[in-house]
Length: 354
Image 1 (spheres, one colour):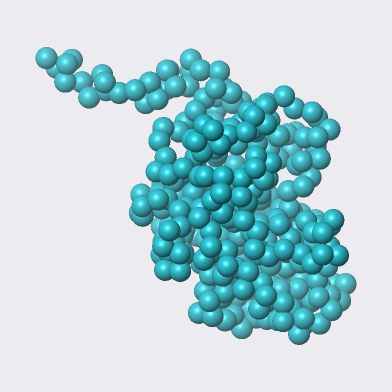
Image 2: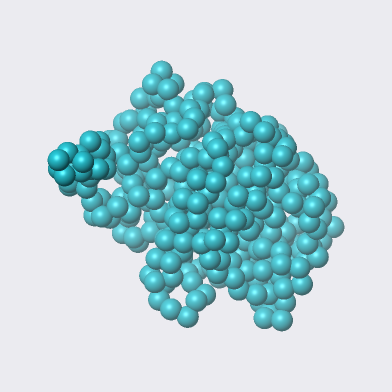
């Protein structure tokens, strides 16, 4: 009788490590069970977050889905638009590494928050927007140009939020920098891609899991106030942080950051309807994979890893008839893999370059 009442007896194979992991080839592991919604080829899918979100965007574009880009470059930049920051994300906001950046982007776009810090100057004399210093790689000739560019940018951001059907956001970092005067969240530390580091003006912040969750939930509530139909997919970037400002080894800081983001993602997915957690982090970093999806630097994700993740994405979030064969093709050309990895714009790389 006791055995018959064992609560584990009737559970599916996916609930058991031996059946779902140990006895399954790494490439065939599927950690997803069910999703709350599907993506149609006509749905407008917008992206934001860390560098890894770009790989999802590229996979959507390559597979014939509607990757929604509201801020497009002028005609004369059509061949080099990507290099000028257009199409990297759905608007030219660059990497949104922290959830505080995201919620403040919404508030700035809708006129609910106007940071007092207006611009930074670079060593080359050009000016940049402190909240996206590398999103416009060429910079601006004057501070006035920085300020003037915000209006069309914010108009594009509002269009993204109001018209998207699905928003895919990849949590990237817990560490970030704030302007002390008003708490404005920066994309990069001052002095990396403009401005000058000054402890009297700027403060380091390492968000706790509950702060990350609360900030993202606040963003979802704002998003649905202007777009009630919006659905959200969240993931955690499997790309390790490039540097830490905490007084400890980068490996320890990276472990905290990813653990905190993963916990926050769980809270977020459980907090509101039509928010789904996509386990790309587990697919890449899982012990069963033996780090095979990283290149020699143990940080860059190989094209094989990206394709495995995208196969999982399409298998679960799209109907069978909408899937594309190129997502399932896992044979890799090494030269092409190197080229594809080079197309990802990671603003965090500027920390090391600086």
